[in-house]
Amino acid sequence: MVYSVEKLSEEKVFKDPVHRYVHVQDKVIWDLVGTKEFQRLRRIKQLGTTFLTFHGAEHSRFNHSLGVYEIVRRIIDDVFEGRPEWNDDDRLLTLCAALLHDLGHGPFSHAFERVFDFDHEDFTRAIILGDTEVNQVLTQVSPDFPAKVAEVIAKTSEKKLVVSLISSQIDADRMDYLQRDAYFTGVSYGQFDMERILRVMRPREDQVVIKKSGMHAVEDYIMSRYQMYWQVYFHPVSRSAEVILTKILHRAKALYKNNYSFKYEPTHFISLFREQVKLEDYLKLDEAVIMYYFQIWQDETDPIISDLCHRFVNRNLFKYAEFDPAKEYKKLAQLTTLFLQAGIDPEYYLVVDSSSDLPYDFYRPGEEEERLPIHLLMKNGELRELSRESEIVDAISGKRRTDHKLYYPADFLADNANAADIKQQIRALLD
Image 1 (cartoon, rainbow, N blue to C red):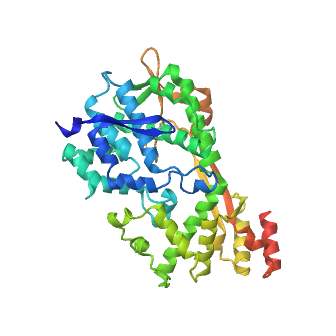
Image 2: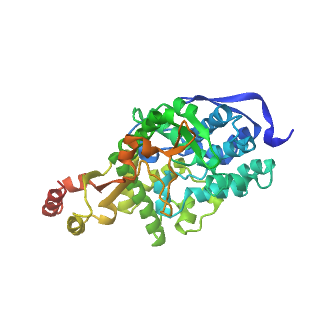
Image 3: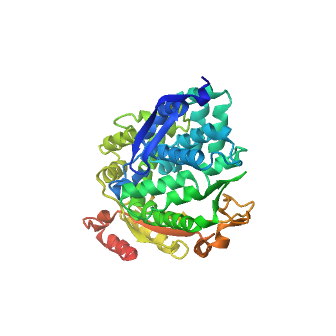
């Protein structure tokens, strides 16, 4: 039997708390799930440091990836099948791209990327195209199949409809992570009527559109996303943990470059510190490895990395104050000077962190990060951009919300054994 259409002798299912079951019938999908590169995602948390705020948020990129696959499978097998606009020859390509879309995420994802200046999507592409078990599976479909999957994930594929199922303003990726993250954090914000949205999705040549009758379900989805970002993803306590995580990695990198003698050689980090990261080194990194180093770095002689690791491991996080960089830049300069006078390094202990989100946008050709809008399919067959029909969506379209906070170690400032007068001045500025 041709591998691309080969089915398992018996359907496999994963029990899932969000979708009840994830169904696998295709041999290719089952083989991809079994690769070591995909299994690595079990050891990467979906929400990074959020577990330090919402203790249930221990779920992984592995179960999110299965969830995205399942949503896409339902769309193309249950909703799109038989419709003239959908080419069933693209079925396996779409399923593989959905399953593998997060394959390149590293430990603690975005914080890790910012410190070492790389993009998980580049590693996703490298895993799919490189000397990996995932590539071996995909190549069995056809020699050019790995490149086709990589193009869909990179949004460079000519198959725009397939791309929009996985990456758009209403895609399977967002529909899964909103519900999954809400479930594991214990909040209700991410809940919306996905069943209704799936029923009213329709394929078009270049994107998925939504029947006008499903507009209110889409409004609910967009507002759910808005609330999840500000109540969960940008929670200031989670951001505090991420600030400390980032500073640990910065400190470790700076120490290595200054020839600091670590008690235990940071073997897994050396290629990162040297900015010569090979794929095989990257794939050895997961959150268990990172936490191992954080544990042992608590005993380092460098007081900064030791303290920061103690804070992260034992959840002694920084406090925060509201901050407006446009109006309070002079105060930040004052605080920086006072921190130095108090013997507290402001590079690691006085941090401005910014969160920003654009909940929905309409199409602005040529703009950076331009977004294809959500289109409604009217009864007469016309397509109308969502914000032209929905007053709720129109009210938030194109409106970016940004929040700034100033993070600092309140316990350092409460200790009046040294520089008491200076610390009192700092506390007065922060209050």
